[in-house]
Image (cartoon, rainbow, N blue to C red):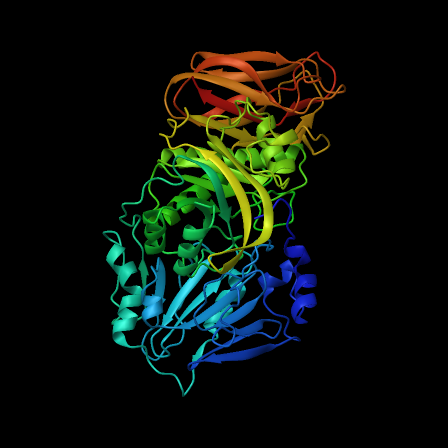
Length: 593
């Protein structure tokens, strides 16, 4: 978690410099390993699996202090250690496997989704992926396989899992250990789900939506120092730091496909134990990144799609929080790493965060955002008063100036997010030792307050010219991405004529009521100074003419109108005008008032 990190594009050089291997380029991941490079078989306790020759293999029994990290394609054999050696500045996720014995250690961990092989089998057909990880309990080899992936590397990981076979040295898991390893998933399965005991054939058990817990909302009300690190530390480390360090808050990565580190210690029991011992938690989601950045996976550059993606990820993050016993009223922080901002990228990021915030509020959680001061934070604060976007509740800014305070410097005015809403990451990727235990951490200073999240926002929707099934225009309308003031990837344009030839935006209105209609367009001195916008109201069409030479790159209100319930064309852009210059059709927003 840093202001600036390397991305997947730089991974090959990192791996080549550290282990002498070459990692496939991102496009190669979808196709699998190069046949010319071949594969090699990794065997552990009778479980055999073919992986690309370029993958590292780490024996955790021989190297117990190794960081289990998925930014480097690796097979880890054995139980992960306490993860105290994990760096904070890792560059995302590629793929990797952890193959460990099914025993009391695995039984102690909460499993949210585990596929169980049939007798005599080493794999399960089409096992489910939960938060970009597939877990398979191989009963006849007595191993639990965790396969981490991204959307891009998932096909490769599935082929690797499907290649698994059983060797003659395979020994079945003890039935009690196998049952205990998948017990939590079966016990928490919601009514109507398929929760099959481990003693039956190939089955998949899915966790229920909530893990009961007496944990209070996190991080709650607190002012003081905290830290974050790539992997949740062991209980012994947490106890040593609780006794000796100045920190009382820890950031933990609970969800997302861009997380680099495994989380072997992070369970509902771990969460409950830390809170009971006086720690506060900062739950972090690390998933979709800015479309103009280097890290993957990326959000869409289309703001309307990005908004939906943000909402979808909020649901996933809440599911992860609930599984860990982190209750409603908690804040969940979306980590968007540094990106080279421009107008289009800013619109996508802020739309993504709006969808994220609105969905979190509807589910009873508060919204936070982490980013570097010069990119995500500057963009967020520049839109503080923009009604097009929904504000996050907490602002977490990375500005490594070494000062433990709440000043965001040039990146955000002091009066914004000033009501106990700030976290400052003031130093990064540093070693500290407390109670004889050394960790690599990022240092933070917080002033946050618990509270009831705002009511969900009133109904609002945005339709862009690229929204599938929601925009129609004749072949006379061209497509351009010339202006940085555009909403999304591009916009449509046409010459004015003395005929209507309307480009229409179709919107489904939930109920007959008053709605504000706003439009977004790119402005240019050569565009039309009297573009007709048609609003299909409940009592007939009304036309508003807009000077598209000014006020571009923002929402411009056309007024409030009564719109009838139903799904139909609501706003049109006509070519019939006496004005000169191109007429522009980009995006419309309709908001209940």
